[in-house]
Structure formats: C-alpha cells, structure tokens
Image (cartoon, rainbow, N blue to C red; front, side):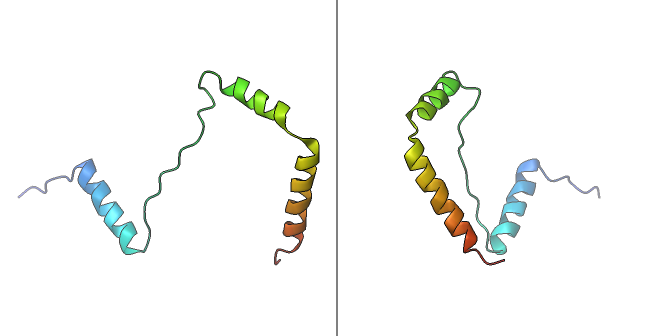
Length: 71
C-alpha cells in the first residue's frame, strides 16, 4: 500500500504543534516597508526633528547601562 504524502498544511500544523509542546508560541512582527511611497520622506522629516541635546542624553544613558552589563 503506497504511503500518502502529507500536505504542506498538515506538515506546518505538526511543526507548530511540536514548537508549542516545547513551550514556544508564534509571534508576528510588522516592520516598516522601506519601499513604500513616502518612506524616505518620512525618515528625512523625523531626522530633521531630532534634537541633538535629547539624542546626546539618550546615548549617554545607553552607554551607562552598557557599562553595567555583566561580562
């Protein structure tokens, strides 16, 4: 008797069941589409609005936190 091949959907379902049994769960992440119309213009607009004093304060905070990380 020939073995019936599993469909892609049934393989994916089994894969997800295995991952869930390992304590994992799926997460969907949405990121900006860099090819979308207006993306570059929006990036430029946001860069122009940056305040160098605020940015320096943020970078100093990040550097201070990084120094406290265990090595």
